[in-house]
Amino acid sequence: MGSQPNLAVNIGGIRMKNPVMTASGCYGYGLSYVDFYPPDLLGAMVVKGLYREAWRGNPPLRVVETPAGMLNAVGLEGPGVDSFICNELQQLREYGATVIANVAGHSVEEYACVAQRLSEAKGIAGLELNISCPNVSQGGMAFGTDPRMIFELVSAVRKVTSLPVIAKLSPNVTDIRVTARAAEDAGADALSVINTLLGMSIDIRTRRPRLGNITGGLSGPAIRPVAIRMVWQVAQVVNIPIIGQGGIMTAEDAVEFILAGARAVAIGTANFVNPMAPLQVIEGLRQYCIENNVDDINDLVGKVVIELGK
Image (cartoon, rainbow, N blue to C red; front, side, top):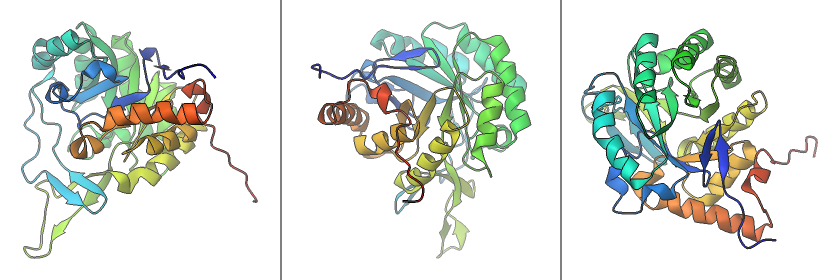
């Protein structure tokens, strides 16, 4: 085998030096992590969700730790798309980071407006449509659980941008294969699988919900088996690349997602525990390839061995 395996991947037209990304909402706008490592070492980074205008998000308490993860109900707080373009994006461009913008909205029209605005800016490699956030009352999961709405929304964004479009799917559905096909049919270039699972926690002393929003999104290692199962299911029915995410803490976790059918992986909750986790996953993938005589990491995609009846 050659000296180093190929880790480069192509996600719907986004060429990445390695398959490791950071998940939206778990890495801010990237600038808080530059003291730990240069963001251009990542395959790509997905910034926090962007509305047309600044958004305050949900009332506190917004985060609750769980035995194997966390519940969050931040509610997509952010400065709005124009502020991001003028401030954070300008700085990220200086670092040479591959930036994917996460697009949010309260209506189909707002999604399309934000997508068009980002498409006119320099330094955006792709758009991820947040049609699965469980912490907002309008948009988000309300769109992502209805295949017809997914088709309408992705189609509307597809018409206003030439950038690669990634649909981030909700796990809070009966059959994720249906929503995956709707996004692909509407023109999505790739899929992010999965967002958080809807959850709730109650303080037994006050007998009140711990989160100010009452419910929130469960992430972390607790949801990893669900996410891997859904990546595998989606990979059976679509022809576009999948970005696997949901509780990835180590390179071994990432390999599971790739074998299930993911071409790239996104690190979420692990960033709060260990800021160096994404780089450790990159190096761990490199070592896995070397130790297992894999010349190209793309050769591992979907290569889980399933022998029914044994």
